[in-house]
Image 1 (cartoon, rainbow, N blue to C red):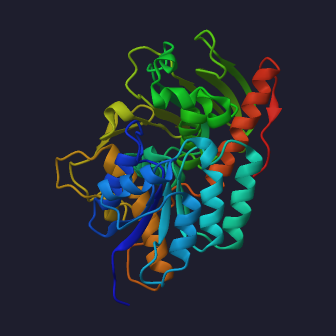
Image 2: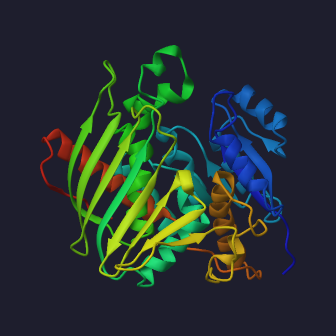
Length: 386
């Protein structure tokens, strides 16, 4: 079957204060295998269409409903193949449901939705339509995080006993939302962000390390969600102790009031034979500790021979050159693209198991349990099943 460029749609991401639209557009275009096809990029129809023109989308639409309907009416070789959703949280479910029901693949920013009920609805529709679906837990696209997953789930550290996952930021340490800053304003608004501010925004990233790298899930949590900035309706600090489904434990900590933090998200996973550790601020190195042995460091950009075949197709730069945030995000788009191409019978590498719809639902179940636990002063509560 002859290959053509993957045609990608985008919902949201066209406003001057939007952060995630530009990285996703960069990621989509990075490998020259996809193009910006359909855009419903702003909340006002006229601005949405004009933004699509300015950003060189093939077609612009006034809203996501008309975009999905319009693309579905086009011929198979002309319509978009999947849609990227980069709106605030409360606007994820609608376009995700419509896209899945119309036969389009989906790459949705996290958290998947603002409630567990919504997340389950999206899951049901995606499952019924066999929808190729990825959730943008971007940091799972870093090659060293992918390598950590292969090593841990391949038995390198033995049976996992403890997972420590963290994500501190400091940008919301003051009342930034009062200045009218768009990214701050919607994140502290329960109607647009959901029941947890810090937890939903970045705590879910930390929890995904438990699922993606360790291959485990929280079954019970004791959580303390704290609001430090006066007048804020949602938490800006998020601390959780979790029991895992293998009997191990996890600590998941996130903060938006840690002044000086540089998106230092990461994890430390300890097992019966060793410990593996990674941090975003040192993202080209993966550390492995074994009892009585020197520290072993896997280095991205040294030699690629030690990378498993599952990861090599995701490496872009020559030896000695680092890969960062945009490449990690591009790897999620690449996995979705290869999933779609593989279903068509096109020859392409086997896609890596980057987070999908079930991971998005699990993230919402985790947040719901943490919010409920914190409301009961840290009482131990079960995490709802996915």
